[in-house]
Amino acid sequence: MKGHQVSPRDVVAAALPDPLTLGEKMTGKTCAGTWVTGKGLDGHPRQVYLYHVTDNEWSMSEYGTQAVTWQTAMNPVIALELLATGSWQGVGVLGPEAFDAVPYLDLMEQGYGQKFGLREETARM
Image 1 (cartoon, rainbow, N blue to C red):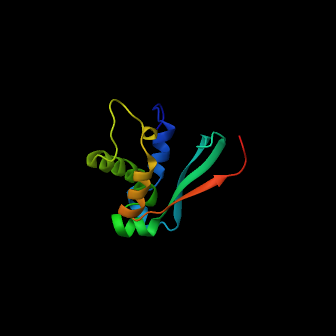
Image 2: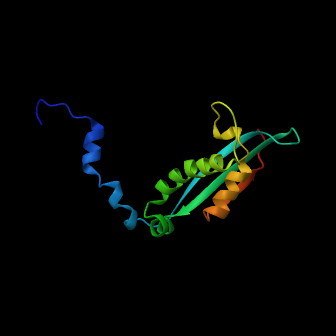
Image 3: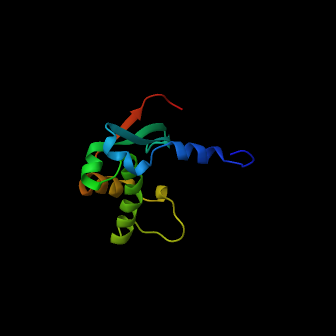
């Protein structure tokens, strides 16, 4: 309206459909991953890509939510479960990288039925 300020974000949000209504209309998969660089156990530079793919139709049928939402939500759920069972322990403020990844990946795959992939990068840093 004339004389009123409107944020561009509000205009875009008003024009887009409600995200809660999109899940059942979506098909396909989403991939979330992280590229990790550092040194391997042998002391040599190492790069790996750790990733997880979720099918939207599966996440909608099993959890009633979009694949992206499910992938985002499962991370803290698995972390909380590992903390609650004592698989992960520590004192103070610790980020996820302070904990052993194997229990997390095992629970993700065996407890939540979600496989992950690990691709070794051959290009050296």
